[in-house]
Image (tube, rainbow, N blue to C red; front, side, top):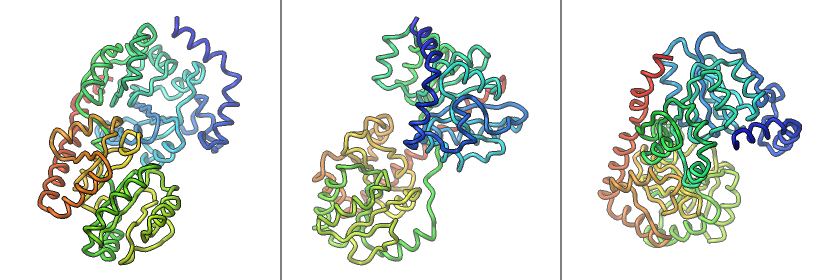
Length: 424
C-alpha cells in the first residue's frame, strides 16, 4: 500500500516539479546549462553509443568518485561496453566531466523519480545492467528497471543505523524494491547483513571501494618549491577542517610551538572559501599567516599557511609526515584517513568519526592511527612524533601498508563481478 501511495504521489506532483527545480537552480543546486535541464525529465543530451551500456547511479561527489576505478576496469575488460554515470548534484556533474572521457563514458543527471521520467530515461539508454552506489535508492527508478528486466546491483552499499531502522519498520515497502537487486556489495560486513535483511538476493562484502581510488595526486614542481622554502622546519598538516575546529587546533599549535618554535602548521579547510575567515582567526592569536589562494608565500617567520585551494590536498600530505584529519573534533563524523595514509603520513584524529567508523576500526585494529581526546592530547602526540622520528616512521609505514592492502578491494570486487557481467 505504501509503495502504491508513493507512486501515486509522485504522479500527482507533476505541476510542482518545474517550480521546485527553478528554485533549486536559483540556489545553484541544479544546472544552469539549458541543454542539460531536460536530463532531469529523462531526456538525454548526448547520443547513445552502439553496443551495451552499463549504468552507474551515484548521488554525489564521494559516491561517484568511489566507482571510477570500477568504471575504468570495466572499460578495459569489455571493449564493446560504454558506461553511463548518473548523479544528482551539480558538483558531482562537474567532477565527472573531468573523470569521464565522453567517448565511452558519459555523465547525465538522474531523472526526477517520477514514473514517466524514469521510463523515458530507460527507453532511451536501454542499459544492460544498473549499479546503485552507496544508498541512493529511488523507488520508481528501481521498479521501472525491474519491469524492463534490467538486472540491478548494489555497489559499495551503505545502510546507516537510522536508515536501517526505518527499513525494518517498512519491510512491506522495502522488500519489493530491494528484491529487484540480483547482487549486493556491502561496504562492511554489517552493511552486507542489512542488505540481506532488506531483501537483496545475494550479498557479499569484499571491502570499501573508496579505498580503491588512486592516491591523491600532486604537482612535483610545487612540492619542490615548498620544500625549498620550508627547509628543515617541522611541518604539521591539519586537513578538512570545519568551523569550530580551527580554534581548537590553534590551541594545540601554540602548545607545540613552545617546544618547537620554528614549526609550521598548514591548515587545509574542507571548504576553501573559508580561507580569509580562518586567516583572521589565526591573526587574532598573534600568529603570522600566509594565504595560498592570495599568492602569499611562506616566509621564515610564517607560523600558519592556509591551503585554501582545490585539488591540492595530496601536495600537502606529501609535504608533511604528520597529519590531523579534521571533521573529528567537530560533530561532523570525520573524513577519509586512508588518503594521508596512502601518502606515507602518520595519521591523527579526534574521536568523532562515525561517518568513517569501519575505516578507523581497521586502522585502530592495526595500531596505525592515533586517536586524540582533545587539544592538549593532540599537542602531546605531535610533539612526541617530532621528538621520536623512529616511532613516527613506524606509524607512517604501518598506515601505508594497511591502506595499500585495502586498496586491493578493486580486484576482489572484479573477481565477484566479472562472472555476473560475462552472462549479461
